[in-house]
Length: 377
Image (cartoon, rainbow, N blue to C red; front, top):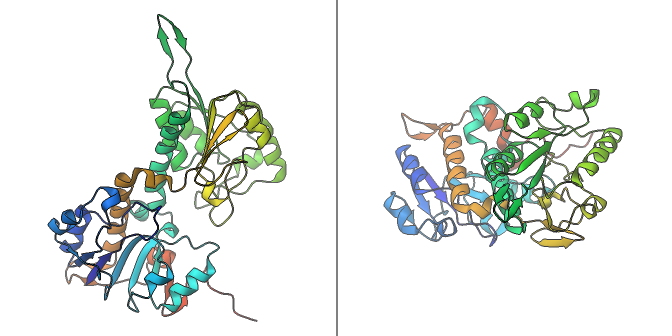
């Protein structure tokens, strides 16, 4: 069983899909591990580190590999090097990329999208969305602090008092909760909002204040899988009015709202940005999906009226070493479900809900029910 760790082609992707620690464990499971040269360099991992862990470092690492580990979906040029029937495990970003899914199917690989893992207890240690979002929430606060021209905590000095920064977190998933915790650690006064009623208690448990229009629609605004539902226009208008008044008083706003398979909801209008005081900062963690903040530009920090809007791409990648360590462990745990520990060979249970929930392509076809082409009547 050959497992290959591919180097990422995208120049903006510094993460890697395995670390020396996970390489050792893969070898313990019976794998021969091959790593492409330089795969981990941007995450602070040298080729010699992989070699010391027992891996082979070679340009043709993916040639003949049974399993290929990546961070991002392989490009067409990469697919040409993979053998038919190879397992390709990565963050596949399948929504809206039908051509890329067809290319995966046509290449004959069995592709698994880690971001499609079912939200079940057994899959928590494999959850790449949570591990990466956790770091994104932390980094969002650090990036905001870098752009903000004032201190976060209240400081009482002989020269006068520095007031605490007011930080507003919009969207209280994994990223939002970490952003709240980080801003609180830095001494800010933190408020947060979300359409899911279960988050109110979570926000308050971290010492922040919850801000939302609490009505009957709000109380039912969560899917069975724990995701936010899209709210009615009427609720959105009421919530926007409340938020608009709140944002006027904030120094920093961090938005994290995403709905799987849909463009990011617009939460902050240009008028809201313009209502903030000079020197304010907004960080948009949803900029890759269209953005929550009007005026946010992917990959840029822009001045919009009195405030700066931070729109960095691949925010977890801004903490590449930490992000890679967590991501690699997610993949290792996922792989362990496919390997028989006694025979040290692949033994996939194709009916396992984790396998069925993440598998995009098999036997030359797109098989995931959310992306399978609709047959003609």
